[in-house]
Amino acid sequence: MKIGYFADGPWAHKALARLAEDKDIEISFICVRYDHQDSVLIEEGRKQKIDVLWHKNINSADFIERIKPYGCDLFVSMSFNQIFKTEIINIPPLKTINCHAGRLPFYRGRNILNWALINDEKEFGITVHYVDEGIDTGDIILQKVYEITDEDNYQTLLTRSYAGCADVLYEAVRQILSGRVQPIKQDSIDPVGTYCGMRGPGDELLQWNQTSREIFNFVRAICAPGPMALTFVDHVPVSVNRVSIIAGAHTYKGIPGQIIGKTERGWLVKTQDTMIELEEYKTTGRLGIGKRFKNE
Image (cartoon, rainbow, N blue to C red):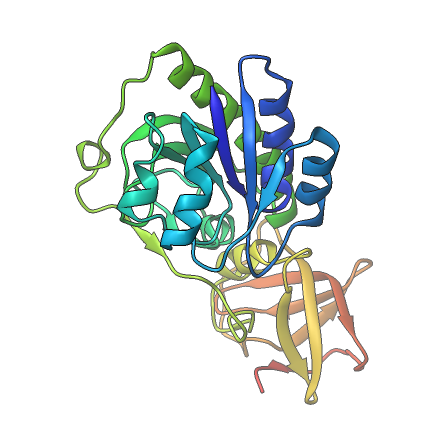
């Protein structure tokens, strides 16, 4: 099987290694993102003597004419950032597939791992599906589900997803190679599904009038290597990387965002319902009992 690989980032690095190890699979070319040309993929292409391409518009006539001579059987997308149109999707006889770190038809779209944690999900999925002109709407080839516990955060889910995407994508490609695919239409699972929007600057602001559980989920959803949750004390920014829920904490009235106690690891902060422990943070400001965290 000859594959054209459209890819970017750590998700794509591990998957490329899995595919390249298989003697039944030939990577004909690697197409990296135009606006972020992945140096790891470029170097791997050089080492393995694989052509590395990039183009501002992969659906353009000149790019399509450029890739047709490779004679690929299948196109594979892994963390690529352009939408495939009908003509390029249908160039290979086995069509085009995508690996998505979300449990389709739910969690289509962007920043899926962050949203799964914010929404207090107990599991996340990795799905390989055929590409159509919709956003993550094509028929499912293979899907696996992974548990989320309170010990997980954005970093742990990323690490598990890098390995999981490589495994699920490779297994799906092997299924296609052997002719064992039984596609599942997404609307047979749920006729509506859900979409997630891309997160951006300003979305990291921490809302102290939420419950302790909501704050816990928000902070762990965007911890490093994400932007970290942001709040302010005396107009000075405080980046929050970790908070913990206090077992047995009681619901009571108070001022959300106010520091109400000191612990060995950090500070107790009032929330909408109970309180949380602020454990990991960065600031040049001074914290103390009675101080109030606010959004500027």
